[in-house]
Image 1 (cartoon, each protein chain N blue to C red):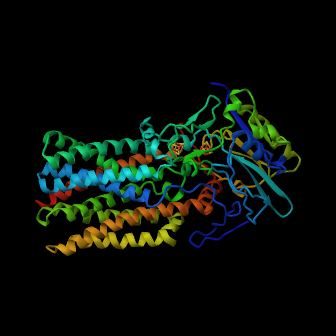
Image 2 (image 1 turned 90 degrees about the vertical axis):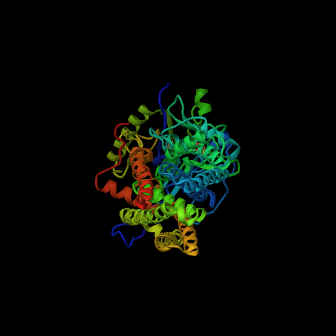
Image 3 (image 1 turned 90 degrees about the horizontal axis):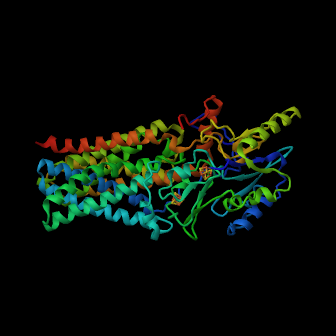
Length: 248
Length: 311
Ligand code: SF4
Ligand code: SF4
């Protein structure tokens, strides 16, 4: 397996130009996701979805403006991949998570399983879609389209280990400059998804950006779920047997 | 930025991105998915009932149960296939067996259940190959218990807070509901004199369903709100009344044909309402960021961030 590749999105550098959104759509031939004025912010993209694989969030605050380009986290423990019954979702040699659209049967299970609300079913073709971290470009030795297009280097692509080191240094520098609110999000390999392959430098709490503050891969608790289901299953058999005994 | 105060949990002030959902709601359609959950449960509990009836020598009740198990499983499978984004690729479900995916485990269970109950029912109706039919029916008694409970794991194994945090009680809610459904349907299709155990199953199943639902809501705390308000709340209340009423009626119906029929219909309607309520509550729970953000924020503030030990 090749080195694990990832994204480090440094939101302090984002200027909200949406070049990443456009580059992603162009390269991956992602269909139109509608142009909706939401009357809440400059965001007319809305959220990640089947037809939106990069999403720039705009948060207007009293004295500043936060912008952040969101993307699939390519989780170490990926719920979407765990629950996929067909094997359509798989882990690549770059340790990223990709859907094989010719295998996906559109069961939709991955959609509510993702703790970040990333993957969705495209009703037009009945299949699940999300960011592939430009799997085709990676195989060709290129960086993903969004990182390539980003004019400010807010989106950085590279080996995950290197990105983590670079991100730590960046946070230290920001702290030294007085931006004490700077923090990393998702980079910790001990978090609820075992560390995200795409992590962020944020200036406020994750939920402000529409990110879950402490996500957890649902399959972490799968053993417990099956144990309770097992008890219920035995209970059902026992209770039914009792219904036949009682009468005699 | 929406900041809201929640009445039931003080300090449930939370921040979000313009009130937008954090996670995606389940995209399963109505009536397909809830009806499948009901039919799967019905088929599962009925096949287990058929197996027990076989062992205790209740041949008439066994006959009805075998047919119910087959009909429920077949109709359920049709609803499930119709639910897929690409129904023509249904067989991709059986491409792999993944223990990490309750839908994969469920698809294999459903395939086994469908095959076994078909053999059991065919043999019961035609009288051909009775030993094979009996063996298949007994085996479906085992797959049936899984059929009636795996759907709880299916829902709980998502990021939807009201499902994931209800993971202990959901299997009992569904098992009880399945038992009441099978009992009710067997009462409707079996002559009174032979339907005693079916009546008992209706009463017991309704009691378990009611108790499991109450315990689940208590333990969910603030997360249970969707079960109390809006469409899901109305469905849940209807389910309570129908299930408890149907269970009580089964206990007191005595010789009355009309009351027995009413009881069977009530528990069936109750079981359907339960599935629709759980699905709808899951949608609400996913769409309102409060249910995702508040518990996670509380975890962080308490210094207990999530981790994945041992993986
Ligand atoms: S963020 Fe969601 S869609 Fe992306 S890998 Fe993780 S679970 Fe899958
Ligand atoms: S919708 Fe497709 S990718 Fe998602 S879980 Fe189902 S088969 Fe897998």
